[in-house]
Amino acid sequence: MGAGLLGRVLKGRYKLVDERGNGSMATVFVGRDLETNRIHAVKVLSRAAAADTELVERFQREFDLLTRLSGPHVVSPVDFGDDRGSLFIVMSYVDGHTLKHAVQSGGPFSPKRAADVVRQAASAIATAADQGIVHRDIKPQNLLLSADGVIKLTDFGLARSHESRDITVTGFFVGTPFYVAPEQVENSRGADVRCDLYSLSCVYFELLTGRVPYNGEHAWDVVMQHLNAPVPSARELRPDLAPAYDAFFARALAKTPEERFQTPTEYSAAVAALPTGGTGTQGVADGAPAALVANEPAGTGVGVAAPGLASDMAGAGGSGGSGAGGVVRMPIMAVEVVVGRSDPQRGFHPDVDLLPLDNQQTVSRRHARIVRHVDRYFIEDLNAFNRTRVNGLPLVPHQEHELHDGDALRLGNVELRFELGPR
Image 1 (tube, one colour):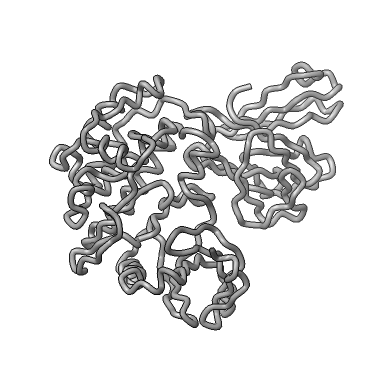
Image 2 (tube, rainbow, N blue to C red):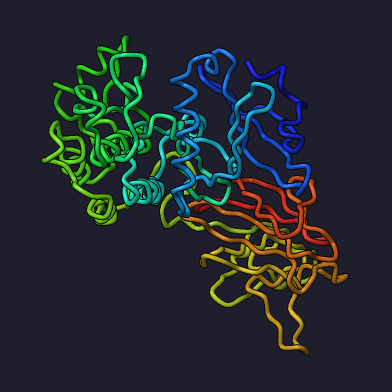
């Protein structure tokens, strides 16, 4: 739909350099601001939709609503315009993917990670509700997960403000069948924040189990289940979850809004109270350590010690004293650690000291930083003299790069392997 727009410059300023996704109404592009050289997301209304006055009004209203919202978990508006009949909205760019992509590509989240994501999304709903805005289309496709684990709510095309007049929407209800609240089916104009929280609960269920609460061959089959079917058990799909999860969903997915959580604050508190000891298939298990692993240079017979870290010598070197070399394992037990080379004369000791493995001192004192966001690990080059490389590719300084199990790292002349979980 948007292929013909690639390379086009809108308003003499925003160059469309890549297509990120499209729907029946609009296509979202990556756009470069030629004046500031910044990257933005640019949503362009389709030609067919632009011929419908009501859809145009809805598109314009989406931008107007965004201008009223200011919060860490809502995309920020940048510009709105009409370039030779192409209506567009420029928004802040999120370097990441949708939650839908994350679940489809990686499987269910760990309980801890799912709770973090959902509480961020509830904060976005609260930001909108504080301005009298109901999103009415909360779904994992509209929740963007950045590379550093931050959730951003987007696509306010179906949102409704208490101050805005009603706009007719084609179809029998407003929303998406898999995530729509029962009362939203019956009267979308009367939707309030409890509808958004119901939809978010459907997302939460999917994050934990990999499946939506209600499914069917046809949209109406799914809608009827929202209206009439019992609330499903998350524990039947995922036995490692505590019984408290079924109790939570029994309330969060209740058929009538009066039986549910009434505010995002109440909702978030209930999520925070859930136990998160279970493990998911995506990311690292809750509480499981990560480690940097290196071959010890032959003949050194030394381990690597650092505050809060431990060394585990194994392999040919046994305990590390045979001189034949071994394996140095450096567990990462803190949320953030600096990897580098100690300098005793200056009194500098990084969290992970590679000096014993760096005979030629090719590692900078502060070479890289490893940080944990919930249950995902990222590495950042600290503008080291000899660049940090992951799987052979040099990192851009001061930009976090996600680490995956088995990644090969090179800091100076020191080669390491990143491992997740106990070995």
